[in-house]
Each structure stands twice: as C-alpha cells, then as structure tokens.
Length: 384
Image (cartoon, rainbow, N blue to C red; front, side, top):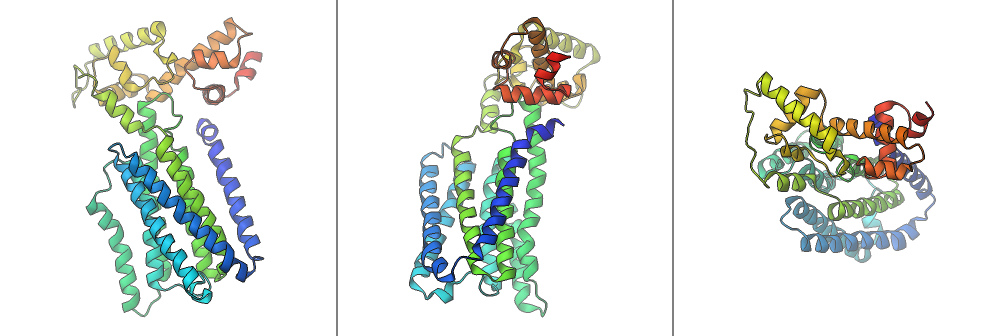
C-alpha cells in the first residue's frame, strides 16, 4: 500500500505519457509526408540539437567534480552533434533519401540507433551506482551488440531483431540497480523527496517508449510516425537535464556527512555484544522520544552518531537488527506517532502545521506516509 501511494504520481505520469504517445502515433498517420519532410522534421531535429548542445554547455559549466554530470554532458553533446549533422543532411539531401522508417533499416543503422540509446543509459547507471560503470564494464556491455551486428553480415540468418531488442537487456540490468538504490535510500534517509527512484523510473520509462516507438517505425515503415519519436526524445533530454541540475544527489550528501567526524566503533564481523546492543538501544530510544530529532525533515542515518558511535554500516545494521526495519520506516514510525499525539491533543491544529512539526516536508508527504503506516488518512484517523 505504501509503495503504491509513493509511486502513484509516477504511475499517473506513465499513463498520461503513454496516452500521449499513442495519440501521437495515431495522429501522425494523417500528417502529409511533404509537410513532415519539409517542415516538422527540420524543426524538431533542430530543436533537439539545440536543446542538447545548450544543455551540454550548461552541464559542463556546472560539473562541480561530479562524474555523472560529465557523463550526461557527453551524452547530450553526442545527441546534439548527430542531430545537427542529421538536420544538415535532411536539408541538403533529397527527402526520399532521408525518410527514416520508410524502408527497412540496415544493420549499421540499427547499431547506430542502439549506441545512441546506450548513451541515454549512462546517466542513470552512474546515478544509481556511482563508479560502477568503468571502461571495462562499458566494453562488456557493448561487445555482444557489436558481435551480433558482425554476425548478421556473416550468417544467413536475420539477426536484426536481436540488435533491436538488445537495449532492453541493458534496461533489465538497470532495473536491478534501481532496486539496490531504493533499498540504499531507505537505509540512509528519513525523507525520500528528490532522491527517491521515482524520477529515474520516469526517465527509464521514457527511454523504453523511445525504444518502442523506434521498433514500431522499423516494423511499419511509416516514416511520418518519426514525429512521435522526435518530440519524445526532446522531452527525455530536457527532463534528464532538469534532473541533473536541480535534484539533490544523495551520494554527495552522505559522503559529505560521513567525513565530518570519525566514528568511534566499527562493528566489523563480530557485531555488538548483547549488553552493548541494549545500552545503545535504550540511548537511541531515549533520544528519539525526548530529543525528537525526527522533527528535522533532513534527518539522516549518520545523524544517529550523535548518540551512537558507529560508522554508517554499523548504524544501518543496528537499526535492522534491533528494530527489524530500515532507517526510513524507523524514523517515520516516530513521526506518525507524534502526528497522532498532536491530532489528539490539538484537534484544531492545521495539517500543514502538524506535518512540519513532525518532520514531513509537506502535507501531501505527511498524508501519504501516515496512510501507508496506519491504513487510513489523517482525517479518517481523526474520526475514529
């Protein structure tokens, strides 16, 4: 129930975007080919190139030492240059020679499309697993694709469908990274706004739609439907650039906090003794009850070092072992109980004031978390 509520906005986003893509594909059948070739395509490709190049320029000016920004900047630069060249060719070459989707694409064109799609997956890979994508792993990801493309020329079998579907294999790997990232966030933060996987799920869904529309173009040979793919790519590039510039990076937040001071105890493999665990548990419960640190909406796992002299892994293990949950549920349990106390003691108190006093970033977040913990909304709980 809780995860459904958290991802409700993302589900709505995916539903609306899918509907828009479906309508666009249907309406594109009625676009005159001459109008598409001479007007729409040049405009959309030039827009895509311009947005990519300007976005790359902005990102490179604000790298701030972040590897994921550099990777996204190069991805934007690649798209911007290729779209720029494509726009020039479209205007310079007779239209029938540039009708994307009007003929069966060659293996080389499919390979190029896959490589472009792969660049769109560099950014989320680095965000989800910083430093994981090394040059060796990148080569391992690309070798099967290149090998299949080479075999397509050497064997009598048509391997183009395999080339077309290959990005979805990489997408499956990213889904695994998403799950790992989601668990990591809940283990380290009490508020998931701007750092949860919702934004990356939306981004990956747009990548999937781009791939699906591309496959649809390859199968139907209706090149006017490239209109859908073009505006979808522009939306994807704009969304990715917005996220990379304005969203919080949890890895940076945690690394900065982790190096502020040195923890006194490292659990290692031995862990805490039963006696020490009881002492630490009592100290933590007393601090949470009396000090109410959860009222700070930016309260994170490493803040527990004020009362528990453990490193990050030790703190996470301690919360799991002693309370049977992750840090996110541990803290928000206290927040929900505090909200119940306030609603009972001050029934006229506004929801906004209650949510802020309990450490929630907004009334909507408060309502969602409260409902996920209790099964009823705050207003319904008041009537019980």
